Structures are given as structure tokens and as C-alpha cells.
Length: 119
Image (cartoon, rainbow, N blue to C red; front, side):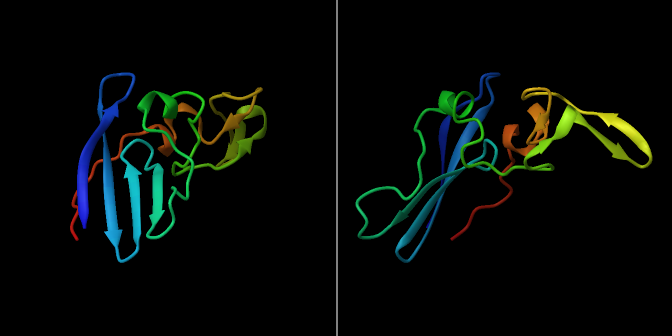
């Protein structure tokens, strides 16, 4: 089973969708916001196997790094600068003077386009 449904809207008004994929005893939910792993359910288990929220606002607030794809840089880049091709590149300092998880333009803060969803 594969389904797409509206989940909510980003703070700038873009629609965020929830994709549900199921096979056998396993069902997962993914958000197009940051490709967040929103839900993992296993038949016979009475609760979700992940922590998540049904509110889009939470993923743009305290849960900003909760379950998304982190790219192109995971973790912190000290001092928010890196040597690339022999020159120093200044990055966005978004956490105590460091660049955490690629800053505000990382994959976790993007709305991903769904090309195809099939069973």
C-alpha cells in the first residue's frame, strides 16, 4: 500500500505531504518536509516505534532535527568555516558559532518533491 495525504503547511505556506508505505506487518510514514521518518508501526505493537508529532509546527520548532535526512553535512563544522579547494569558506553559524547540520539550507529544511509512489 502506498498513499499520499496532506500533513500541513510550512511556515512560508508550502504544502507538506505525508507518504504512507506498508508491506506485510510494517507501515512507515514519511514527510516531504526534510524527508522526516514520521512514523514506524509494526503489527501487534500497540504504539508507534518512533517519536513524532502530528503538528507541522513542531517540526519547524523544537523538533527541527527530529527524524529528517541530514545533508550535506551531519554534525557540526567548528567555527562555521571549512577549507575547500585551498580557500576558506564561511558557512552559516547557526549553533554557538558553529554550523550545525548544514544550517538553514540543509536537506532537513527542504520540501522534497515526490516523483512517484506505488505499491
